[in-house]
Image (cartoon, protein in one colour):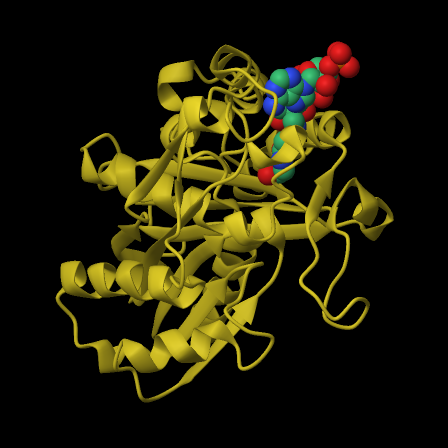
Length: 323
Ligand code: UT7
């Protein structure tokens, strides 16, 4: 059976770091409040003129270099983003070109904070069906551009960043010991569109709009739907919770991560947390966390990793893979 195996990862965070102390000069807030309620200490902010494709190219380049494969051996680029450079063309095509990839296809996926899980699900389907052999999945965001910087309930939560995962079609035996994606499933429920959204867009206001969120409601959905998505995947694989080596969830709020870990009966030291330093980078948050935890040796070859996410839509899902 064909499996989508991770060859490498890459990541990029803009140079500029905005601390909570700096946030105190923008909105009425306090470092201690932000840390206590979210775990966030700082976030990275893209420079003026630095766009989502710039971040994505850096991350993609690193993943390709670390894999040691020719860029042109990649036959699909999927970019998960809610903050594209322009309305068209897709930001993925710009990244494809700048990475020197000339064949195959490239497109964007918009599922907000679930974007990486959506993109992995699509990539896995392409690989398992034989439609693609080597897929670069990138999550890249510049949420600083769509934040309402006068809304302390949202602007303190987000940051900019990008990360990439290079997937390769490899033959497995078809069992849970195979390396690669073992399960990847996505969901959405559009009755909740107004819990987390922008107040405008291309066709409605002819602007990008600014973000608003009903934080408490989103929190409630996150701590129930993310663990449920993990359990759905493990059940499909006939694996128990004890099979999990690492939980690498979407990084929205440290309290949410703790709640997800508790429901999955996983101790805090098995939950990868990067929200403290990156804040919420939406579609980039899971691959940034995978990059960090594989880079420092926590995640090792053969480990079973579950990656649940929830975002605007609502959208949610989970990718389960063996590293
Ligand atoms: O990626 C998916 C999308 N995002 C999420 O998953 C985020 C989900 N939600 C959350 O993380 C939390 O709901 C927040 C961090 C956004 C808010 O935490 P909370 O514990 O739900 O606080 P709250 O909204 O109930 O606000 C509590 C108080 C309020 O004051 P009053 O009404 O009690 O007087 C807020 O006005 O804290 C106030 N507050 C703040 N105070 C200082 C809200 N934001 C701030 C702030 N600084 N930045």
